[in-house]
Length: 322
Image (cartoon, rainbow, N blue to C red; front, side, top):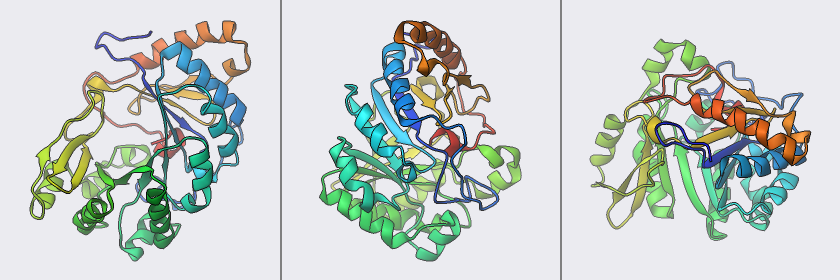
């Protein structure tokens, strides 16, 4: 087991199945162009082998499948069936929900029981402005079908000043009514926003302002959360829960257990570090050759983690998985 001096180790792996995405959200890409698959993306079999090696080399317990948008990837079927046989404690998936209705049978067949769905507004016009793709009604339909199938669902919202701040309470009401847990994610200094501090500051909404807005409508109390959780959880008594991923307001770097594997074979130990470590060539090697080399890279990836707080990174979030 690889552990750093703060007692952190990699428990949770996020695999970006593809860089392609059918949205072009304003906080992710600055030019409105949808992300496309990279020419050198690994095959589904290679990514499954990567997960298997990382389980053994790092002690990975939980997997989250991300993108880009994983449901657009032609590798989804083979990858999910492959990782479902690896004995992980949990396999979850993050999606924008646009293809959720279509892919739901596959997800259920592969043992997916937990989803995070990105949804920044319930206003159809604002949805089109922020996502620059997709259709709100289609997402809501997919959510209803997933809920009826028994999946546990969290919604992810990035509050943005001037774009969707008026949706904080309506989205929370919607989640409380439908049994979803809403996650408010503070805007991150990633990609183009890392290079544009003025643009970041103009849009950023902090945890204190969010809680003040919520408190005007709902009483809430702080709830328990796992020690390595990114979200601070709250309970609206008798109605449900919500959380705030307050990477700026209340940094969580000291307990971070996340490792990311990109679709092109790079390991990222920290979103706030420009360092990355190529493992794509190791995945074609037999286990006895791959594991020692992989463990050396994992030591370096763990050392990339910030000591205290996230300070920003130029990598585009959706290329390495949210």
